[in-house]
Amino acid sequence: DTGVSQDPRHKITKRGQNVTFRCDPISEHNRLYWYRQTLGQGPEFLTYFQNEAQLEKSRLLSDRFSAERPKGSFSTLEIQRTEQGDSAMYLCASTPFLSGSYEQYFGPGTRLTVT
Amino acid sequence: SQQGEEDPQALSIQEGENATMNCSYKTSINNLQWYRQNSGRGLVHLILIRSNEREKHSGRLRVTLDTSKKSSSLLITASRAADTASYFCATDAIGANSKLTFGKGITLSVRP
Image (tube, rainbow over all chains, first blue to last red):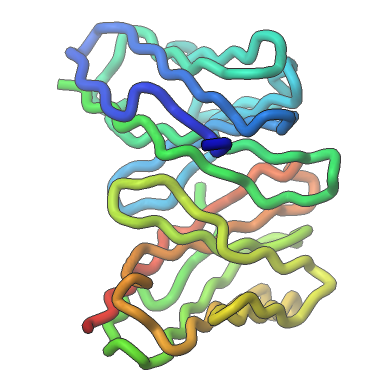
């Protein structure tokens, strides 16, 4: 399977705990995006990387959120001191930006539930 | 914030009928894309139409774009029960570095 993969698929945590999600993009896709989707809404942009450089962060990404993409391959999204409002589906997408093709390939998402 | 507004919010049709979904947006765009999402799953890219294109086809899908009205429509012909899903339009706005802004989505139910 050469699609975008995300791990874990589901995460239940208690308020105040830290969680980390991983995204493995399609090989050689140099752009990687993180989105958050709550029930009944469309995905909302959080941040994106071009290779290992984090180029933009949304205002939605508070100081408790941090994302990395070491070596320009997989990416991690960490949420510290989780709050109930963080409960959502976290989606990762990648795209081969250099080719001029801009469709994004999404992973299955990580569903976070904060109790 | 979400730029796109899809219409209707929900659509229920009989298998074999055509489904038309509309999307309006607010800013100038490089392209507009439609995605499908099955319940609790990730998004699947359906079709991309660039700002200089007016109509595009892919299999049973036909998408139109009217940049003067800032609107797009997605037509699914000869619908199947397997087309039951949520459909989202997403815009790649000029100057947005290809990050996508999604609407709230349309829930399509195709009755067998």
